[in-house]
Length: 212
Image 1 (tube, rainbow, N blue to C red):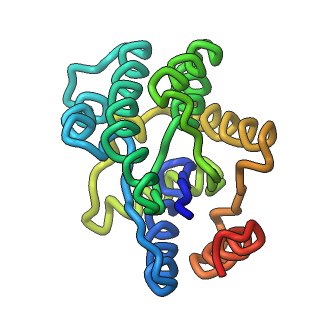
Image 2 (image 1 turned 120 degrees about the horizontal axis):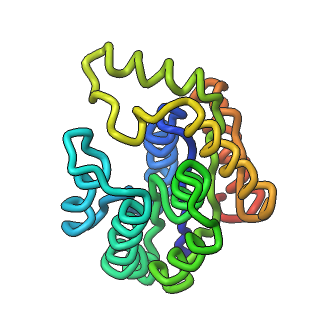
């Protein structure tokens, strides 16, 4: 049976590394999977992505930013996520609807009820089977992003470059969401080693009976 797993957290928390490690385990188990991301995942989403993330402008106001994310998400769900799940393919997504609650309701301080309504509209009610939150302090996340840039990686995008207070609100929102729905979230301490994080994730997936 296919599963829809979403990986959330501050930029620099290690989502990509954990997803890659899980992919290797799924491959060893003979399971089909598709990795994707938001914003993006489709040609339309990839076209929208720089409109949201580029620091070169034009910078969208908070409500426009939210609507751009939701437009990308609606296309993502209909073009990629639902079809893959129907084909019995696991979908692993780097961000989904919880990010809009965290970044736009938490970070931008848009009314959370409005974000939830737009999320439901964009997803047509689709929810992840499990959201994996890699929780990391703002200081550590910023340090990791700085190290990545110093090693020749991408420069910080417009969202990553926001002030610490913004990212503090984002982190708090993620933790609040996880606390409200503990059966649908797995919170991991992203300060742990990659091997420790993978073991914890695999233990949870096996506990739920999704992996042998």
